[in-house]
Structure formats: C-alpha cells, structure tokens
Image (tube, rainbow over all chains, first blue to last red):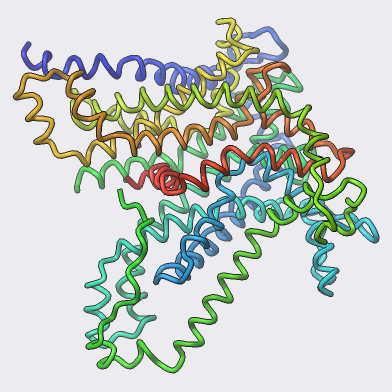
Length: 296
Length: 298
C-alpha cells in the first residue's frame, strides 16, 4: 500500500498521455490493420472480412509492384548519398575549421524548411525543359559550358527517375547526418587517438583502428533514420510531381487510392505494409537503444 | 546530452608529439588544409544554390523574371512578388501560427510531466512503457490516417483547427517525452530525494525542483514541435477544410501548379519558411539538440 502511494501519483500524471497514445498510435494502427481485411470502398465504412484478399491483390497490382521498386531505388540512392555526404561534411568540420559555426548552420539550414517548400524550390531546379526554356540546374550547366550534364531528372522515363529526388531529399537531410557524425567523432576521447599516435600510427591508421570502430553505432543510427524517412517520404514527392507515375511510391499510392479513389481497404493494406517495412528497421533500433541505455 | 555545439578544441597535439611525430606536420599539411576549404566551399555552393535561386527570384521585378535568366542577379530589388502572393498566403500563415503555438506549448508541457515521471518518479513497468511510447515517433502516419479521419469526423473535430492541434499534440508526445526524460535523467537523484525528505510530494518536486532547471529542455521540445507542426502537410490535408488550411497546403496550392509564375512560387515558398528559419538561426543550438534526441541520442 505504501509503495502504491510512492509511485501512484506518477502513474496518474502520465495516464492521460499514455491513454492518448494507446488510442492514437496502437488503437489506430490496429484499426487500420482491421480495415485492410475488409472490402471497404466508398465513403461508408464496411467491416466485413475478406481475409488476405487485399494483400493478394496488391501482389498482382502492377502499380504497387512498380512503387515498391521505386521506393527501393530511392532508399538505396538517398541513404547511401546522404550517408557519404553527411560523413564527409562531419570529417571536414571535425578538427575545427575557421568559421565552423557558419558552415554547420548552412548545412543544417534545409532541416528548418518544410518538404513542401523544398519541393517547390527543387521542382524548378530539376526542370527538364529544352532550348530557350531550359531552367534550373540544366540552365546552370549550360551557362557554365557543362551542357553534357543535362538530365531529365525525375521526368526521365526510367526506373531510376526517382533517384533524382535523392538530390532534394539529400539536400534536406544530409546536414542531419553530419550532425550525428560530428557528435560521434567528437565523442572519441582525444587520449585514445593520442595514444595511437604515440605508438606510431599515422592519421589514416588512427582513423581506421581507433575512430572507425567507435563510429559503428552512429552509422547504424544514421542508416535507420534515413531508411525509415525514405520509406515514409510523401510531401516531397507529392509537391514536386505527385502525379508522375515514375516517382510513384506506396505512400503516394495509399494517399491517392484512399482519398481520391475511395478504395479504403486497399489504402489500409498499403499503409499496413508500409508500417511493417518501417517496423522492420525501427523496432530493432529502439530495442537496441533502450538496452544500451540500461547497460550504461 | 552531448551538444556538439561547443567549439572543438584546436588540433592540440602539443609540442612533444609534434616533434616526435613528423607526420602530423608533414609537407602535405598546407595542401590538406586548402583541400579541406575547397571541399567545404563546394558544399556551401551545393547547399546555398537553391536558397540563392529562391531569394533572388523572389526579389526580382516580375517583368525581369524569366526562366532563361533565373540564375542572374536582379538589376533592382522589388517586393512586388511578395505583395502579389501575400493575400493568398495570409490565412494559411495565420492558421499555422494559431496551430503551431498551442501544439508546441501543450505537447512540451505534457512531455515535461511524462519525462519527469519516467526518469525520476518511476512506476513499475515504466521501462516497458517507454519503448512503446518511442515507437509512436517513427510510425508512418499513413497507417493511422483512415482511423484518424473517421474518429475526428465522428467527434466533430474535422474541418477546423482544434482537431489538427489535438493530433499534433498527441503525435508530438513521444519526442517531447524523450527530450524531457533524457534531460531530467541528468539531474542527480539526491536533489529529488532531498526534496522528498523535506516532505515534498510528487507535484511539489516536479514544480519546484525539476521545472526550474528545465527551460533548455522546453526550448528544445518546443522548437522541435513548432517546426514539425509548421511544416506538416499530411495531417492538415486530411483534417482541415479550406478556411483552416495551414500554410503548407496554401503554399502547395499556390505554388504547386505549373501555370503559376516562377517568382510568385518562390516568394510564397520564402514567406512560408520565415518563421522556422528564423527560429533555427536564432536558437540553432536547441534545434541541434532536438535533432540528436530525434535520433535517440540522448
């Protein structure tokens, strides 16, 4: 009884938040899964049970298969690009350069800008008009005599068109990755590096044998953060060129089929698969983070 | 919290090691240093190129705007583009202020209570509940959209700002809870225990011991929440009707079409960014800490 008096008030204080999250996160996720097993179409909800029919239908759905391919291409290019760029920026700033704060502020600036605004800027930069009407990056290339770099970007007719979106997405997020790596690099105690130097290791070897192993957790966080963002990417694609089938992804398909088409059951099925994809990277990550915190 | 904002110690290898290890000051050093600055400036160009296009186009006289000369500096400054788009953007701007301010204040206040309880006034099962809360921060919102729209419609909260504010508060709870939990974990247990010995209950300890030291955590949590509420598109798109559209939707409608003049698209994008960019530039330190928390790096 006395122990309840000890922790009871605490539980009482967090109960409203816990209930709200229980409903809005877990209740809604469960409800959405339930919808994915119905034949709900149109504005009136239908709660029948059609088993896995919607899932089987998606497996044969040409657009959905294309979308999965797109999101995988996008994830590969975007994650690898942002990881390399972010790491490079952190490495350049790590040892203290003059004006570090200015550089860092510039690299992180896009994080403060909404994906919608980012998309509106970049849809002009990734313009594929020709001749006099050439705009954006292609114009810049032409002005500098680099016309051979001209690209159709996301408007090109290939599976890789969506890779062009990794440019604005990387622009928006690689500063974040830089910040993660910078914190990681600066977390390596100076004594360790110094000890290796005294032992005669040169800088590349110090990096490889001392710094690199300690950066592995940072790489893992960065990959998980980027991969889950890339699976969820919606606003950016929607505002750059949402109706372009070459950059269609499951998140966009879900939106259009549900709210434009009224195919609620199909939308819920796509959303459930999206949730599974995100959970696959996020659940181990949370588990690992919480466990390593307890060990500390 | 390891805020990587403190200036890095210079490459202090000390006279001893420098003498003993000539590699640290090899003849390549000047090349490495200049290479570093060249690379940094190339990166700056990449990051500022879109900003440059945004700003100069928005400031050009509409008669001077042409896609063919989009990279050229304006011959004179003009605010005509802003004047042209502001009437269309104004309502969205006001709605977003009315939405983002309460969403960030309430979510931060609740996060403070949760974070305090989960770090300093723990109940059995707190360690089990915390990861479940965290998961809410990473879910794809598409997977809650259909039930959310149904629920908000049934509650009569769809259409206006109230429902949108509520949703932003709730989905903000995981990150604000995380920020405050990490922050309060840094207060020593002795202070909490001392307050208890003096007879303070939970609420007194929270209000008179924990909260007075929490302003930095409030700054981090509120900036994060303000930015995500301001920049949100998805929730606003399903929960509000025309009169209550937040700025992102207004912006997408104005600037999203192909027919819209280039300068007007840029001017509205610029206006829509002003509040979050201002917060970022002025309070960048706290912004950065929010990012670290978002990656579960306490």
